[in-house]
Length: 283
Image (cartoon, rainbow, N blue to C red; front, side, top):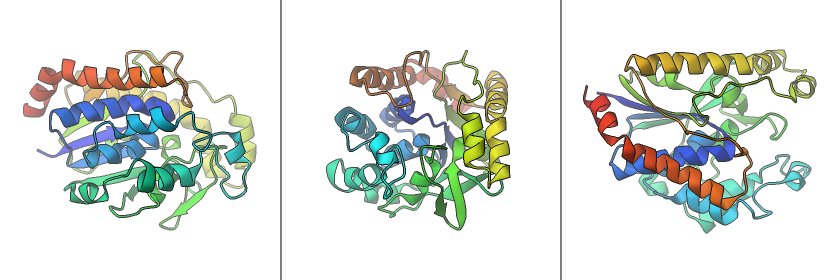
């Protein structure tokens, strides 16, 4: 059996995924292939390094720290991002809440970050390097339109992978995984609407018409992926975790109690469904 794990993004809502991954660590479950979008894989590497609770510690300690995110970082010409990239991808992992590079290097599987190639408007899949202490692939997959600059990695002009492949379960299947655990970050009843900033984004990225087309199709692609995912779940082809309720939880959520509660709900869901999960993996 080759086990795959597909992780949706969702900025701070992805703390639910961290709870699920920490619950999987409690069961000593690690996938053979991991693919994630945006914060899904940015948080997911802590799971692959077996650092239970690390992402929760980062958010609860620093989400209200002015160094983490804010408009001042977006207008800073040395950053050009709503999120302070050097603080998040350098200061925190290399000094404040250290990332275990050795444990991540020892992970025997494959790890990929989804990006959207702004020139083609299509998804590209970057291998997450084991010893990149600047986390360039993770920065690129998290590059939210209008809130990040375009980042070049491996010769690809990258933005948020969630534009082209928001829930990358098909990538796991294409990579030969016959069992796939999928972690989504929106409740089952959620339906994505067109972004309110779409016209502004279309103007901003007018030099990249394929990317603009992808932005225009984003809601449709997302909803179609969820329909397919639910169908595969009913057929027993994937095992899906998703939050019961994210109402009132912003993607830039700063309420520490809400963050802790959403993380705990992910852990609790894994433990409540352990028998169901083991039956799926053993079938």
